Length: 261
Image 1: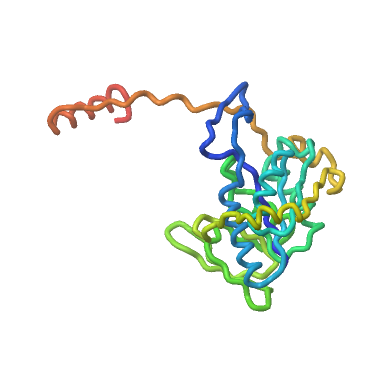
Image 2: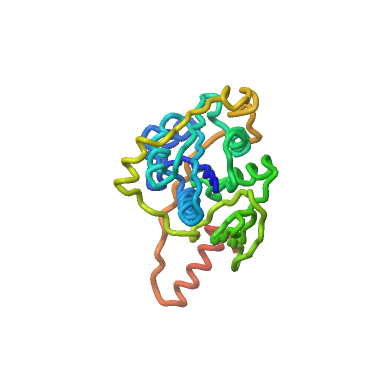
């Protein structure tokens, strides 16, 4: 089975975000594999180990993304495609999906995995766009899957509000992974050493038969006008006294200062 996993490099959530001139200053950020993509990669590897086949990574981004691709290959993926071109920069989920689809049309696949969202933009749209552009079935928030013996369908459990929903879907399809699907593995020394022998192909705008007006900020359907840090919260107040006194003072503050009652 040929499984493709679309992965994204994102800032580590432990990094301090600094905003300068309406944009995020990336100079001090630490970059990691998107946490939801970790579940997607792990599930693809488990399917490969059970059924055989190949796991291929596809990632869009500048040259620094190569580090994340290599660390993910060390987990056990077989090959990777790095979609790197200045024209791709400043895109949105639509143009990201458009570039990924152009690459996917050149790669054999029986199943496509993504994380359900990136923890940077929090859009949760790229996987949906992929499925629509490729005219494939799509299931989001996947927390369990079982592929049929013939490889032509799968029974999938997805997380919904208050419970889970079971869906039967034909393959190929696009699945997006939710936390709880599995426990991602760590790279072994053997896996790290094996990266040197694995293929990483870099594809640019020209390789994907796209034009500059289709991608990046030019082709985007949305535009980020400005980014700003949230206002600092006012210091909290601790009320003292007997319960009736505290209750009376709280009501007064809510009425006279907060003006919410």
